[in-house]
Length: 348
View 1: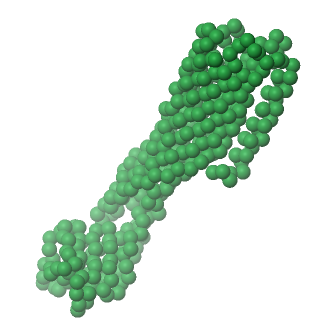
View 2: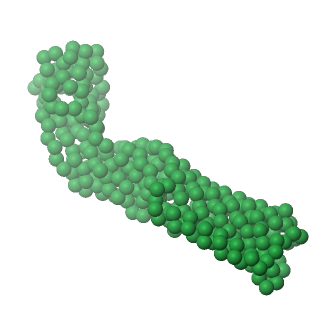
């Protein structure tokens, strides 16, 4: 986020680096007989991007309604609602249920289970593919023989961030059970059954008897995924050291401004002792801006004054990114990621 105070240290660092690079060039002259501009296209692989899913097995509260008469009730395994007669005589035919096991004597039991979920473990799905497009502008030279160069580097990069967790977890929950009676000696329709507003069909007494109890150690199985696109722009000074006639080593650093756009999805089954499993799935997309900094090194081999190939490594810190969907949350740690890259450069 833009308001993270820790990230403003990169602004100060960039100013200091720029001043240092300018100081190195005070004893040098601009090189007029060489190509001062360079474009580089590189493939990259990013590492050390960790993710953690929270709210694993989270079940949001359903609007089950109160325990009075002539109210709409919604459950994990059915519904009991107000019918066309406004539940005349305290009975309704606008109801439905999922499982035969819900029938208990001359009652039908309906359940609603809620859970805040549990925190998952750290997940690392390295490497993450991407590309870099860089522009270098040479401003001057330094060194006793004026063989080293300095200038400004600007780049744009994309990284595909994919994090998947298929591990099981255990969570605590709260289960509400509402019991609706029907006339003793009668038999309700076989499950699954869906009654309609207009009816008529088998009727239930519409005032439930409610019990609430905690459920410990629910088992959560399923899959949680985050698919993100990380776009980052970099700008800062660089210094390039001549190691030989054709081999150069460049060091750069400065500001990094990023934007993450991602989709968080999950498909889970939450199982409880003495109750039918609950399947819960959802997805949502979101995005945010990120501010940080980078430092990198690049080894370049020059075939001729125009073309060269290079290998690079870059450390980058963009803080944390988080996103929510239906009680679930993913936290992506981008504070210590690094990348390796390789590509080709053209000077002009």
